[in-house]
Structures are given as structure tokens and as C-alpha cells.
Length: 265
Image 1 (cartoon, rainbow, N blue to C red):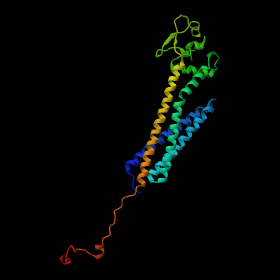
Image 2 (image 1 turned 90 degrees about the vertical axis):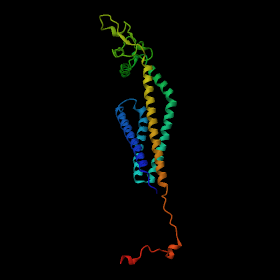
Image 3 (image 1 turned 180 degrees about the vertical axis):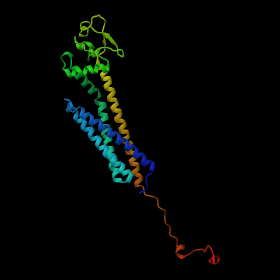
């Protein structure tokens, strides 16, 4: 069994440690999300995704521990377990990445339909209205499809433009609830555009960010697998031993006296 280069071993341990740290952070985020959404009514639709995250994070942490142990102790079985497990996980992640790209238009269309089904907003439940108000303040928009017209008479104050507003504004209709408490007759500016375009722009940014993060994680996994394979190849390589040559002259005692013993007396 040949010795593994120190730089190669340290590179593998460094990459594997980064994978372990990333997996630990993802596990912490998953636990926090699960606890935060525990009482949410839609938790049943998210439980499959949360369980998948638990599976990947825990298995990856176990594999990194086995891989570092194998590299430090030069255990072939541990390195083989690591490289097989990490390759399988990489293939699964690539499949999820491709599936996410393929289903992206379908997902956005379903979400758009779900939001449009909330119209008219006057008949929406209180939780939906409060969520939409937060979205309007965050994205600087008003309404879902046709702007402030979606609210009818009861235009909420979350549609009001502020001094920091960057999106276009328009004067609110005077027959709306916003003018009930005004006496000077000055125009009230509200956001002109609806929230769906801004919401989907924000949603696409999040989805692309997640896909980019997954691609980065896959790259780390592939790099660790390559380094692990190189280490295994080094371990399987036999050390070169000097060849022992038999000489008949040595058996015959063909030696030469280098010095005369009388010189030392």
C-alpha cells in the first residue's frame, strides 16, 4: 500500500469539511422551517420536501464523517462507502435539478392561478388579505391582476406610495375609502401596477438562487468524489521495492582486503 500525498489528503479533508458544514447549515434551516410552519395549515403539502431535506442532510453528514475517517486512517472500505454514497446523492440532486427546470413554467402557472382565484379581494378571507398587504408593502404594488381596481372601494393603506417608492404611482380614485378621512382634497398617490408581475420576478429570483445553490453543492460533491477516487488509486498502488540480485561471487567469498591488520598494531 503506497502512501497518500499529504496535499491530496488535506485537499480532500478540506472539501469534505465544507460539505459537512453546508449540510449542517441546511439541516438547521430545515429544522427551523419545520418548527416555524408546524402550525401552518399548508404544512401537509410541504412535509414531503422537508423529509427529503432531512434525508439528504443527515446522509451527507454521515458520509463526510466516514470519508474523513477513511482519509485519515487510510481505510479503503470507508473511502469506498463515501465515494459510492456521494455519487448516488449527486445523481439524485442532478435529477431534482433537471426536474425543477422542467417544471418551473408549470409551477409558476399554478401559483398564478391560485392567486387569481382569490379575486375579488373583497371576498377573500382575513389571512389572505393580511398576507397580500405585506406583499404590497414589500414589493411596492397594489392588487393582484388589475392593480388597485381589484380592491374595489376598500383600497388598503398598504397601497399608498411613500417617499422611498421606486415603482410608478397614480392618484387614487376619490370614491375610495382612502378619502374618508381627508378634508383638504389633496390627491392620494397609490401604486399603479399589480403585484403578480413583481411577485413572480421575486419568485423566479428565489428559484434560480436555489437551483444555483444546488449546482454549487453538486460541484463540491463531485470534486470530493474525484479526490476520493484518486486517494483510492494511490492506496491500491504498490510501493516499489528494490530488486535483490543474487551473485555467485558473494557465495565464493570473493572479497578484497582493504587494509592490512598489521598497520593497526
